[in-house]
Length: 315
Ligand code: CDT
Image (tube, rainbow, N blue to C red; front, side, top):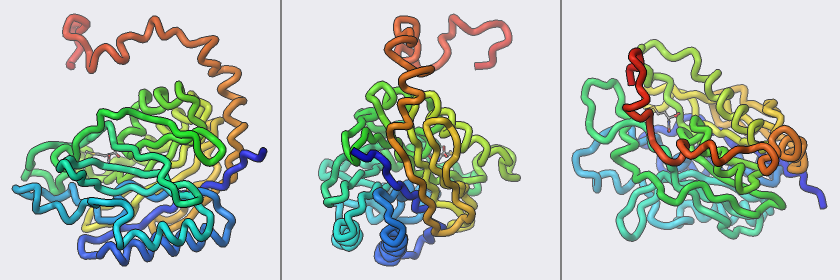
């Protein structure tokens, strides 16, 4: 059985505040058409792919933000994307803001198989930014106000003839995200992101943002013997410049495909899932070499224990 999947990163350029869902879905469908023309099996869209990155504004009453969230998926506006993908026999991964019937708010990604079945839903675990209005900031990054951190962890699903996991944006900076999926045999990790270039204290942008983006995804891929597909919403959105650099990373850590622009752009690569075993069965043979009995601190504590602070430690 062939386990060579053609996977595409469907990068989006900016979505402005007044762009309605229908216009965004039209853009997503244009990328899906391009995927069809190039025999793609799986299309990966960014984090919060249906709207502007609304956590950059604060509202006093969170219900004023309800219109940014999806109460059902697919909604009537998004249904044409599901229909088109199913008719093409292409699977996809889509990020959006989710408002549950119980009133919980999550930063969510779903995985849809080529027959239109929703295989899995992932809710963001590592929520960055701040909970309260910080008026001195040029832009808010109030994800911690708008989203509840998931308690569901990092599941991995059997789909697309492989083992597929998901994570969202800030999750990609934490090695634990990859390893928890690595320990479930993950072969492809799908990750949408919105990475503003302004958030470091120095208002001149951090020149290392692109470097760090590659660093974390390439090392996460290599150390777990998995493909990683990172997909940006890039470009200048409501005055905020965001990293593009969508990429498909191999289990070797090599970049197989990378976006050249910060606009809507499809890049793809043929991902032979059996390549993962060149790493999973040798250097990173977990069963043979890992020493979990020595790693208890990783799940046993959050930060540095005060008793372990040395005389110069500033934590
Ligand atoms: N969306 C997201 O998670 N962005 C973060 C930057 C947050 S800065 C407060 C990231 O890690 O790219």
